[in-house]
Length: 75
Ligand code: SF4
Image (cartoon, rainbow, N blue to C red; front, top):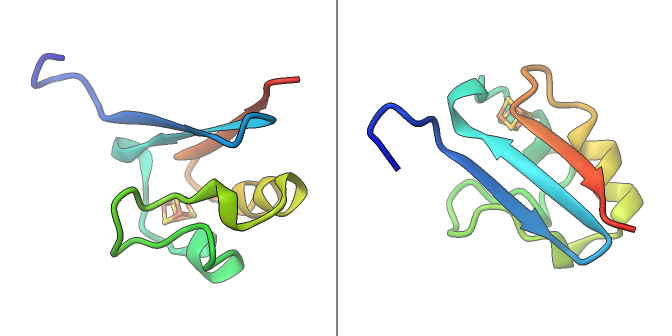
């Protein structure tokens, strides 16, 4: 990866893949407020999909105002 490539990470629980684009993150913390069991900014990895259901994760991702978080269904 070159220095100019924005960081983009993917997390999956098998059913769902969550994509996080670091360069778009506005640090509004909506994700953390909505689903603190999954989004833990002080931990690495900071997204832990095993701690909630797929529908809970989708709901929290939908509150991201910047487009930094998105998801796709794997099934
Ligand atoms: S809700 Fe989106 S913009 Fe806000 S901290 Fe989470 S990922 Fe970043």
